[in-house]
Length: 86
Image (cartoon, rainbow, N blue to C red; front, side, top):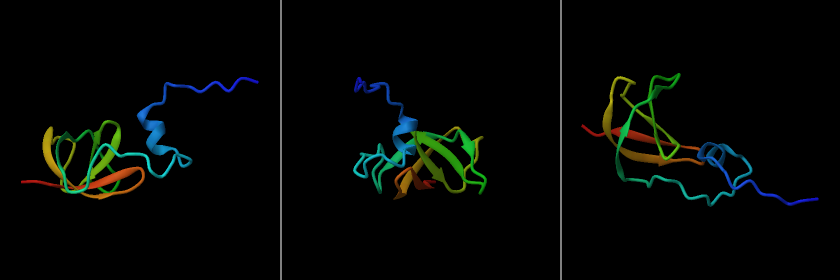
């Protein structure tokens, strides 16, 4: 039996895999600011942005907000929360 490992791991599977190691480095850092594009709206009404495939929920934004500056306030295993910087 071959122990072939698929080297083509997508960002999506890395962050949504419940079996992934807990020490997987996230592409965002707590307290850092980022320029992002709001691409979707969550069912709660928050804007959704992504940094290298990692989901970030941004309060008080919507899809029409093309490029916004955000500050990361919380990082979980598969997502982060951020505030809009005005």
